[in-house]
Length: 130
Image 1 (cartoon, rainbow, N blue to C red):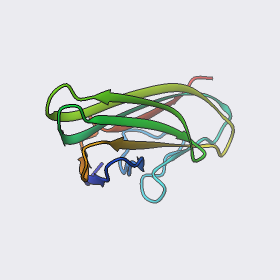
Image 2: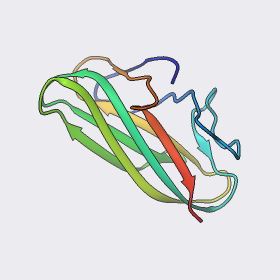
Image 3: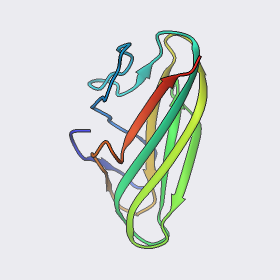
Image 4: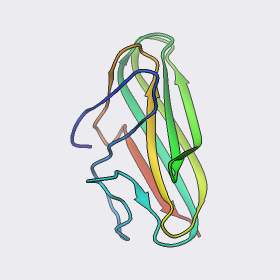
């Protein structure tokens, strides 16, 4: 992502993923909706990773996979010390043409925190399996 994104505390917020490594089928929108729209039905491996900057001991970071606007998978990490919060989740998702996938993130710091903009730490990766 080119820009750091502020994430309010305690509320799941869509990650504005505005970059791509590759998109051979032109299925990801990095400009307007920040989501992946399947062109073909199949099973897709979805992997999401998020890094929230500067959390306190005991704070939580949660990353979610949303399908067509609904949460279908999530994972939470609890800080063992003051540091950046990283959460990771993955799922194999059945999609039909025009279904869409988004990544959401949340934290429990108590005030806005930034979603790290380095694609090595904050990303959504989707691959069609069958």
